[in-house]
Length: 292
Image 1 (cartoon, helix red, strand yellow):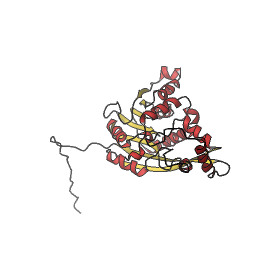
Image 2: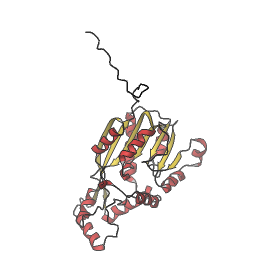
Image 3: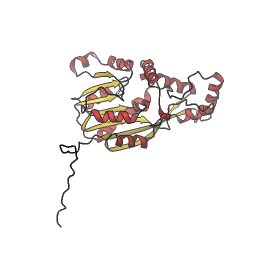
Image 4: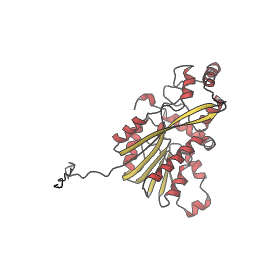
């Protein structure tokens, strides 16, 4: 992937560590996307025994995945320890006593501390957009999945927060909004990682706000700071920020300011390995056509 998309991973972790307590109050979009992903599971036949929530955040998806797959053990994995601690605090006493507890792992999606072929489902909702190398994460997802296991994920596409990008472009040419990878490039990365039958689609969800500061407050509350490597690391001056606000105001419709999110959905299967001879050569089977 191009370095234009690279983020400062240390800053990503710090942002989500700081926002753990405020995250749930502002994560309306994140919950909606997770719910839409859960509906998509109705379309696949799957009975996992072990599943991974990769980038689990404060644990919204976990109880819903466990309710759907009651016999499965869930691993919640996130880069930010504070997020996992908030998720753990949501587990009630009865659940701790009478149900299987989730395993929690603080780790990087690009280097999963999990065994090969150990999961039947890898679920990742709005997490991979913060990675420098989604290709590497897809290879890791492929590695830990068992053959015929399913990867289901969502991410943000390049038109996310296009209004905010347009507003700040009136001030300077620095990246003030994180850059996100196109749906087709993510589909190609899935194929390169060894997945079969990748399915990709996209939709745009528009949130509306009363003013620009409300947009910025929500982004800060969920930890979605600008962490692009080429960003301006100093504070923006009041006059420059006001110019950006004035530019955003020109986009006001029906008394509200729009904030567009391009949400990319994808799922793919890990295929069964092809049979090989002892020397490593693959077996290609030919069958004679029936005589007419």
